[in-house]
Length: 107
Image (cartoon, rainbow, N blue to C red; front, top):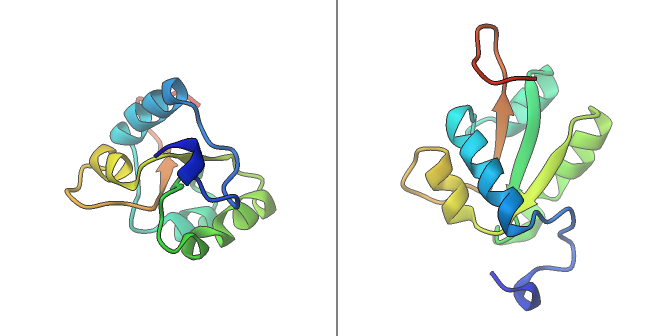
């Protein structure tokens, strides 16, 4: 995704280096089916969204929900890369990284 193709509604877009780190972390602990539920339940560490979601409006409520729950979020360039990081063979437009008891991820 080039900068010219990025929807003007997307902000907090991660650069390439941060995107790689985020996708690596997402690969270790993600919950791509229930990003909204994990935010509402308070078990989300942060949320990752894809800027190339079509239509982008389907995820525009997530930044508002994250702000309401005081949870960090970030936008990455590719739903295909996010899906791969989540361990599925299809695009994922949003996922929540969760940290549970006994997790090897550091808070």
